[in-house]
Length: 240
Image (cartoon, rainbow, N blue to C red; front, top):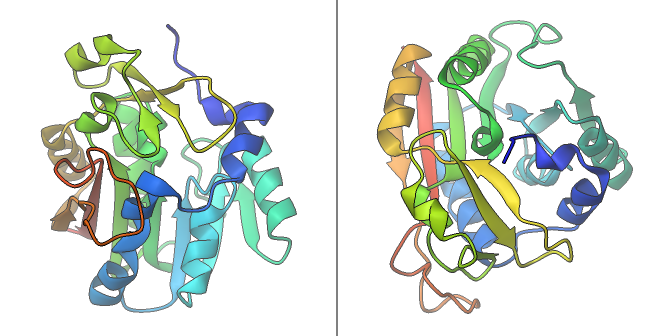
């Protein structure tokens, strides 16, 4: 199984573009407004790995001047077609030269690091994003926990991929999204907490806070595993 960014496939991109915040995805974004209000000052935001613009629009709705960037031409085209008034840019891998240093109060990365192979590449990207932060700026990295690839969820299924249970750091894992018509498995790269700790240290970032949101019984969703095991992890990061 070779790894490639599955979202640079137009059929996949169009399916992903239809998503809002259904099911398990709701938990990924539920607590972000409060976390951002607590840890971020200022209104200039960069959405790294914006895809079809869902998280960029989310930031704009919170009052940010948000710019979305992605390496996938298909995704950027979809973002612009969905949101013609938004700001979306296609960037080359690791090239942030279009932005002056110390420009942003917030850099949000929602799920992008689930698809970035290699420790060195991740360090290079995070170091580049760090340089775009103002002195008190924050990076908020939202990613998948290793457990998301070994359980059943409101929005995902992994039952057909028992090999996920034996995956080590950086290995490819497969998961099926239940909220879109495209039933082809998504291939991600699993990372563990200590890997992120090492990554942040190498990129000269400190963990300000860490959150693993769980579903609640009073929420209007039919949770499967979400109330006892967190599918997502949220890191709030600052410059050293």
